[in-house]
Image 1 (cartoon, rainbow, N blue to C red):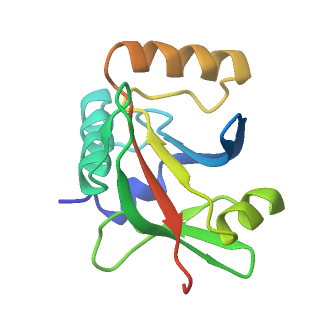
Image 2: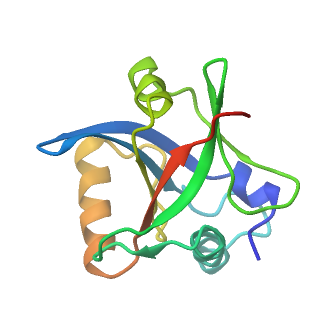
Image 3: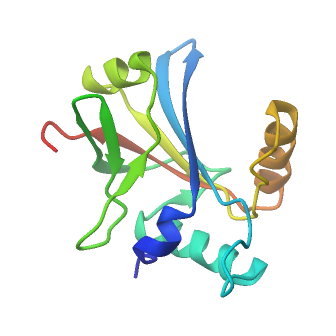
Length: 151
């Protein structure tokens, strides 16, 4: 069962493009800044991130990511992720035009939620270290998705 919209509204998402030898790959990193609401604890945040990963049928971050079908909707420069809730989608903060064009052209996108909380003020080095530590601990999941043709 996916987490509710209240939890999903509290996550942070960042888009990017990986330029590799095999071509360009869109990326969507999903993190949580940690407990902020009165009913949140580190444990409930991690549980919510695990539920999000399970709802998306994500695989372990150290294995080849399977494909989950078209889960990203793009319309008029806005993007949203279908995370499995029957009434809600997760809006993605305004991505770059390059990211939107890449997905619009049919390129794959790696969705990557990180279970342990990442403080909002983390810089690039802190984010990279957090991601590497989480991956080494088996706390990163991922899958490949694509953009839908219609919102």
